[in-house]
Image 1 (cartoon, rainbow, N blue to C red):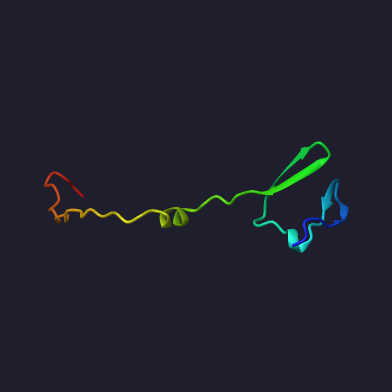
Image 2 (cartoon, rainbow, N blue to C red):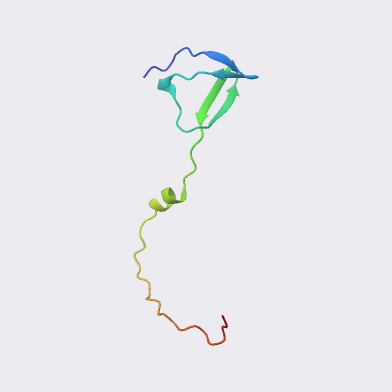
Length: 79
């Protein structure tokens, strides 16, 4: 992959925009931009893991759990 390429700047409303070539496309739909001297640094925002992704990283529980008995309801409870 090339590490350098000219890109087109244009106006989008009151903002300046940059057309990013396909080979430099960032993942996701959000980026962080910062300025260091005369350079603009653009980095993708890391996607927040969802619950299923997080659960998939957990290892299984090895211990056995006791069987819960089906207990009759308390007699004091009125429905």
